[in-house]
Image (spheres, rainbow, N blue to C red):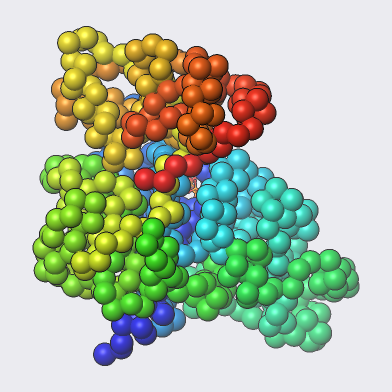
Length: 525
Ligand code: G4P
């Protein structure tokens, strides 16, 4: 039996950050194949099922397979236990996507080699930066013509503000793609066009200077040797400490579709990626290896399974061990609860968890008492920090079809915002109710759930809000802001003063005009 410390040191808890279509679903599938969690390709449902989903949220839930119900995928690999947390993408992109990143210890960034760094990746990267999360990069789709690799790395450095250290280097691309050369092991991994690489398939040529390498690369050999010299001279050398500090990203090249380069990346990932890190609470820093159990809730998912009408609160275990039937303290409510039915998700099915240690994710049944950001402990008064609300990027005014249902609407919105399904703002100058989201599907989910659970029919109208900022400052400065910028001031669902900016320019002007006021794009729970 390994000790708790051993178990924890083997945990690798991460999420994938990428722009839609870069290949997250494809690479997830290959990781699960490598981890033996699935046996055949095609088991992970991708965006195809998501696509027609926007029109009907419930049918989407039923139709989608692993991408929703397996919010957490756990598999053993090379002596480690890997936890891969799904980050909702495409239409189901939401604040949950951001908050999932607060529950991981590292991230894998997948970039479409033909497109480079895209918008969604930038946003997700900004979230990772809040905690200096270590990031490994994977440049995908080398079987196609991609952009110049060196240009891609420059873009990562410039746009994402993180140093890029190539671990391997592509030998050609598209139709001429011959494989990758590992700069550190001096090994060529041979790519065969049209082949889908299965488990254990890894044809290697040792030594760039070898006759075999010369023969394999043929007429390209001299150019490749020259290019590699250039790359060595011009790029950063991998440094584990810089990676762990979130300042440097080791980058791999490959093609997820052909399962080429994924294994190489995963092998190094489990070697380098951090095991569960110590985490801050408002009271003290908690070491992952402490004996006593603690964790926080980062996501609440409603009606995951139509057979069970309850909600599941996802908890990241931060210290100690959960064992079935244990008593925990729900710190915000002060109540002790006995938890015997925490679940995890295997192949789309809920299964009871017997044990979970720091780094693992467990699902708690929630009948309304658990909120995002809640801390659970074995008695100690702790409150984990760093699980913020993120400023919404999309806004709608919500109106009732039946004006007599105002109370029910307010209650529904209150609860949905506590759950993190949406955010709600009450402008001070009128009686509007504005809901905010970071992904469009959130609006639909909210309307559906208001009707289903609160019997309220609501409609949305466009509203002229570009972004929201939580404002902080002295009483005097905030009073001035309220007086002079009354048209833009609102109170959010948690009672916090907020500035609703109609345009980017307006926000910039407000920041300039009220230099003593802090305009924040995140707010702690
Ligand atoms: P996402 O989850 O990040 O949105 O991306 P996903 O994996 O669904 O991949 C998006 C598209 O890119 C898919 O094509 C997928 O097959 C393709 N793709 C992923 N990795 C590679 C790769 O290494 N090389 C090439 N050439 N394509 C890749 P699709 O046509 O939209 O869907 P499908 O018909 O293949 O399912």
